[in-house]
Image (cartoon, rainbow, N blue to C red; front, side, top):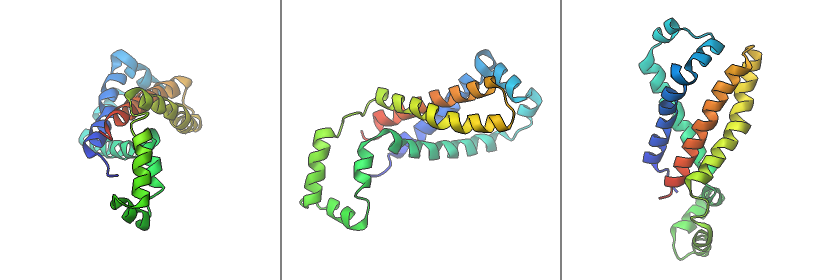
Length: 171
């Protein structure tokens, strides 16, 4: 199965759009700036095109990984990623291809919903983002506020990305 690139690119925009909202001073921006030691001067001193460009590349990488995290059907197909199986799957009359079609006919669209992906994203936010960002924050001597603002952002961000990917990737 090939990557659905338009879905990957749109999902990769979600962290930027959510970031504009989440880190807005009217939402959590002031709390984040205070907890991180960020100032308006530091923000204005950054090379924003470079920062946003690299962030988008990172978001594309994240969206690619989130497809296998939230779409169970890709796991079934990954078992047959070796060259011999790929050749057999290309032949619609092979035993493996017929078996795969039967499996996908029975479960092919199961769990392909925004809600299912959203749930996986929240789980990823709690069990991936929190331990990684929380550990870094502890060693950097950051506050609980810093951890909550950033981990909250990533939990919601991953939930929205996985929800979008799960809803549209295989369509």
